[in-house]
Amino acid sequence: MEFISPEGLRLDGRRPHEMRQLHAEVGVVAKADGSALFEMGNTKVIAAVYGPHEVQIHSQQLHDQALVRCEYSMAAFSTGERRRRGKSDRRAMELSLVIRQTLEAAILTHLMPRSQIDIFVQVLQADGGTRAACINAASMALADAGIPMRDLVVSCAAGYLNSTPLLDLNYIEDSGGGPDLTVGIFPKLDKVSLLQMDSKLSTDLFEKVLTLAMEGSKAIAEYMRQMLLENTQKLAFARGTLKR
Amino acid sequence: MRGLQFELESGQQRRVSKAQERLKDAAGSVHAAAFVNVGDTIQVDHEAGFLRGHGTQVVNGELLATVCGIVERVNKLVSVRPLRAKYNPETGDVVVGRITEVAPKRWKVDVNCRQDAQLMLSAVNLPGGIQRRRTAVDELNMRSLYEENDIISAEVQSLYQDGSLHLHTRSLKYGKLENGQLVTVAPYLIKRLKQHFHHLKQYGVDLILGCNGYVWIAAPSESGKSSVSETPMDLSNDHGSEMSSKRSTTLIPSAQEDGKRDLSDDDKVRDSITRELRERICRLANAVRVLAALGLLIFVESIIDTYEVSLSWDTAVKDMLAAEFCIKIVEREAEHRDKKELAI
Image (cartoon, rainbow over all chains, first blue to last red; front, side):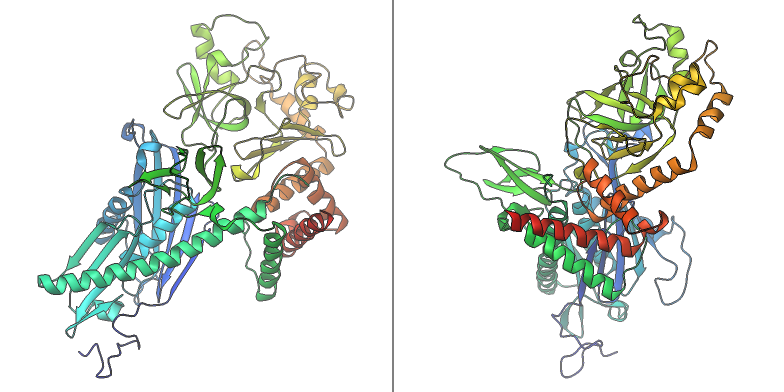
């Protein structure tokens, strides 16, 4: 199947190095301590963070750091065909683990001993790149909750089809059978927190695709920073000062 | 706007954005560097030296922020204060909490903090007010004092290194709270002031602004406790007096000899709380909810102001949580701030 037209346009009209449109909103779940909605094109993900609060299961309490729990789920209506998935769905368990490990590396857990942080991520609409969108949404939700982190975790996916590295694959490109690489980085500290890939790539092509994904992440980081800053300013200005 | 369930139409959205813009302008020129994101570098004078405070970390000699918030500088101490974080306790704070667990010789209290606070048996007043050593019988009767899901007001006694919090109710004004509504707001909206217990004489309602973001609005407790154990007819006399002054019994609910509450007394108290009083309590609670959703500072004057404004606009109590009222409050606040700016 032809994923790139002779003019160099992809199936949805993007250029190979072009990312989908981003949209992020903070504070979408009222009851949560922190929450965010992150959209990358048609992929929409909502993340809610509860915590830090008292550890529910006392035996799991860690005396010197916070316990981080993460739950990933896909809404039944998120894919083209409506499918009810259980929580113990294998893919969901793998993704929960991956997201938890990625974010735990960023959270300064030693500042919150004997407490628990719950991260819930739900995919509302899946169109490729859900892993990346989930990590981005969870990162913004953690920042919204005021949980101290080393740096924001920003994630982006890239692939290789028709001999071209492509940035931010959508569902059709994802199912094209080519390699799909997801990277999660700390933009300021320039460190990698997550690196996952399916299929095979030779080392030089791997370098190209990885660099492309990292550049995409840095661009997303700029956008996330801007949205978080706007949110902080809005809250601060609304509160004002006490004197009336 | 967080916490209220409504969708804004485009026209309403525009009004809200406009009001928020006005609030921003009224704040004057705030230094852009005062707001930071996670991972942003904070400007410090490296030669003069600096002290690293909360919300910061040093990486490669640079000072980076670990939370999104406002940079605070006190002499050489540089810290970043996040806005919507969990309650940050300080000794001496008045807090309102909910009992989550009854453990050996202590209660665990949920105070919107990183960990549940602890209320030691030795830190409460025993019924009767006598000072004596707590015995095993006291430990067994802990449930007659406070049970799970009871709401209490207490003061922060001390903080420990690992972040755990100890409370005490060793004053007559603290203790179990009844006959009221609890509204949870974000802790950053409540400022630490001299007085956290308020008795609103004009409405006959008690108001407690817990530093941890839990706000308690209730029928005056005088009519509940002391009269329940003495004479029910004293209800009208006790209106309009300060909450703490006239208390003769302790705040432990009428624990009788066998340790069980008399249910008929509860019914008497409930009957004495009139429909008008309930409506006033609900209106005040909704005023608090609206202020919290809009992110405005919550203190007695602002609550009373919102209450009075809702009466003057003839808003029904339930309509206070609708979009129209909230937008009007934001616009009103924006006008106030503008006027203050012009006045200066």
